[in-house]
Image (cartoon, rainbow, N blue to C red; front, top):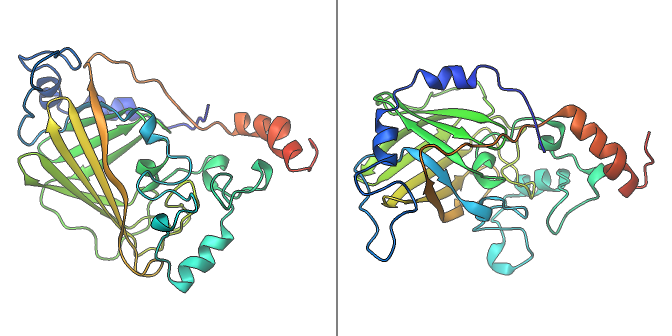
Length: 276
């Protein structure tokens, strides 16, 4: 299990307004998962709050669901020459370019944060979404990470200091579609598990569409003119199902000590480097 600390997360989010979350989770129809043999309950307007589970579809070990690195022609990414150069410097331990575990330079295995958009594109597990009048807060199971999407009308910063998860602003495109734009992400992160690169010019668009009361879809588009000749869709309507409001979300946290033990027992021997 991967572990890394995130101090005061629970303290921070406990102060947020939970009224909309409780309302979405417990409409008069039922708690999630109890409707049988009838039409799904209608989605509430301007509300994506709740505890959402993408199931195994969120693991994405070969790269994002809509564009895995599996060698198929339809999944070829439109790299620029610089994009190919940076890609070839990355050594993932999954995919068609995979190396042995002890030879990878994937920053996540050393407990660096995944960053954006990789938080959506690798090990996307149960995600809790909270809404306030000023922002939408997303709590991710993998890494026990939280992130804020501002909804108060502000613009993305013009010359941002790089951050692992960048800067995010969101707005409602219609009653059931919430669109998030993210920029200012740290270049040290990878786009996905397959090692696709990004530059400081990366722009990520996330579209959260609430299909009905119990179903949420996420589409993610990558736009980085330094690394790719055109924008490409990494997730295409990945589905989440609403969980009951009293669900307990287990932690998955990066632990340097656990990684060191894994490398000693598995990674280095598999790479022929011994167990020193």
